[in-house]
Amino acid sequence: MTRLPHRLLPFAAALVLGLSACGSEESDTETSGSAATPEATQTPAPTETPAAESGGGGEISEDTSAKPEIPKPTGEPPTELVKRDIVKGKGRAAKAGDQVTVQYVGVSFSTGEQFDASWDNGQPFPFALGEGQVIPGWDEGVPGMKVGGRRELVIPPDMAYGPAGSPPAIGPNETLVFVVDVVDIQPG
Picture 1 (tube, rainbow, N blue to C red):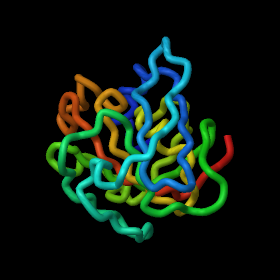
Picture 2 (picture 1 turned 90 degrees about the horizontal axis):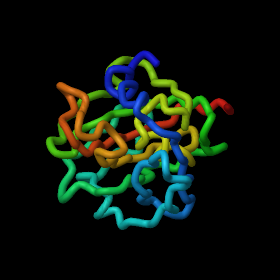
Picture 3 (picture 1 turned 120 degrees about the horizontal axis):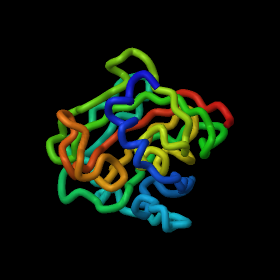
């Protein structure tokens, strides 16, 4: 945890148990229900969403050896988590409890401006999946990914930083767009 604490760790304290929704092998784009609450016991099953509704702004490179450019998002931000596989990856799928190492880029949906990227730090970011070390949008959006996979996550505010934001880089009630590349998965 050397790269996201100032952005993702503050929210982890307020995080409830992350419920994971495994991605489908057949669908490139999915949405998931809103963040879990203490009263919630399960997350609704993901539903397919056409790529045009994914919330992203366009084409993202399939070259996982280089930092991706995220086009400025267009349209209205989604109210549910949106997952869109750019590259599927191979091998075992990540699940809650696994130690997952990723490269990522994060941009603000409203401005398209980058607020963070592990690529800029020169090292991938490791975290325990489903254990509240990252925002709920990651704990629900990364399960099902495989090594070599690249996924776009469009994360609504209630699964990110909510009304508080994470000043100065992330404003209140901001929808976030991440492109996440899985570099390694170690079983939990």
